[in-house]
Image (cartoon, rainbow, N blue to C red; front, side, top):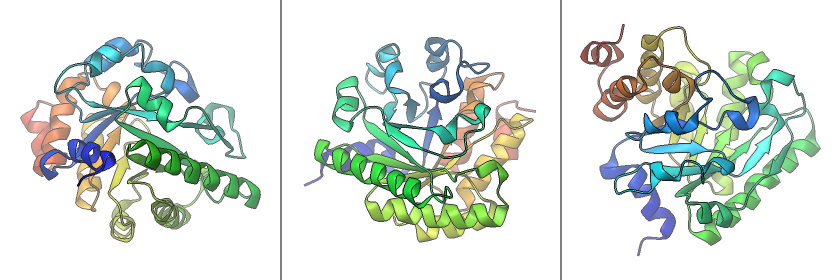
Length: 271
């Protein structure tokens, strides 16, 4: 018999296909970024995604996007961490709970997400961050909802590619060992294939920073999938695209149908 978590995961990867997740929770850390000011308008352009990642407080404001047959899955973030508020240069990567898995389900969540930073420079903070993940996993198991573990290296913008690869590889395995159902993390180039191969749950690659051109973002998506990821999580590169709907269709060609970035760009008139 399938568990509630397994049923919800099967919906995300419908028919075994890879998943596209739109992330619009940036205001939780960075305030009103350009393009994210009016999330009611934004979410209306993203309903063709498989899932949309929200902050808890947005769930009731955006409920209409999730309240019809065939709507994307709602993912709600459970914790808040200083590492995401990059505009203020915080250095400790401390994390605190915002909402329980059960309360997230009450808001409409189909999936929940917990963020973890590791190798912060403090053994105590690392242990607290791992405790947060373990507590959220236990809550999600009890509630029967899948949980994504987001591996976010402390100071990731300032570390070398080699250190980022090491921390992400170890961090993904750690959160999988604690019990998450999916992992979300930064793409690390060709070596991302090693991360995916050594992580015993599906890995989703981040779009991360806004890239100069839409074609750059499509190329990133192609590389994420070709190195073994089961999907992509795009925020700024999707929401800030001139036509989010058109970009999303191009992403589908790459992520779900195996098209190259060049093929998808040509098919959807993206230069």
